Amino acid sequence: MSAVSESIVREYFELHGFLVRQQRKFIPRTEREDAEIDFLVFNPQAKSLEHPLPAVLGSDDLRGVARAVVVVKGWHSETFSSALLSHQPEIFRFVDPKIFQRAARTFGAEGSLTKILVVPSLPQTEEARRQSLELLKSKGVDAVVSFRAMLSDLIEGVEVNRNYQKSDLLQILRILKNYDFFKERQMEFFKTKRSKAILKDAPGKAPDA
Image (cartoon, rainbow, N blue to C red):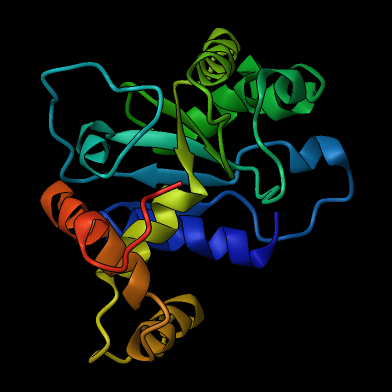
């Protein structure tokens, strides 16, 4: 896991009020060690949700996560399809009882412990996405969070008039936002269906392909 991916995950959980502890600071010598848990996160203001946690977590769902072990797979050029998951058994090594229980003891008190996997992306088609999520669930993974969702929240949460000198990641996002590098993306996000229809029917506008 690269330091950049690590920073994104840490800042994301801290943004949503979690206390974050990194499981290790050293660079492991073996792949087996590298496949263990990356972060332990604790939400001091967790609340009970009226529904079970979904397989893919959004920002609102994090309120229902009290304690979690987090494993980061920053393979940013990969899609976590069922085929990839089937051929990468090391992804699920962190749910091994010995590894999981060792992490669980860190929290001390008994209670539920959510197993979260951070992934670059899931398949786009509904069926392929369902297959991937079902495979993850069958292996013991409770939920996933995508890097896209994390970065989207961080970009939205950064304020251009603040100096994030203690976080290189947030400082870079703040500078990019200050120079309008995210402006078009945000405008597109907040467009209503009605405004899109007006643009589509405006003179000189070609219909969408």
